[in-house]
Length: 76
Image (tube, rainbow, N blue to C red; front, top):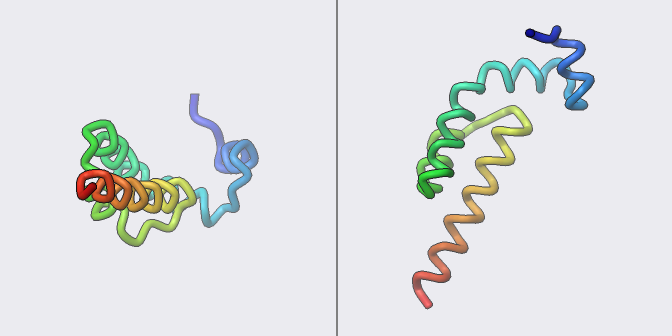
């Protein structure tokens, strides 16, 4: 069952622009989630470079954090 844009945006507290950006980036977000499962965080950063949706921006920033923390522990 597919929800309308208004129902989906209301459930996630997204504006119409954010919802449309998330719809456009859905394939990229799905690919990024696969890279996260494979622990390839640098690829997530590359795939979501320039993301506009809140979910895409979060995943890009979170992967950047994980790349930094992984490098820190490897160097110790």
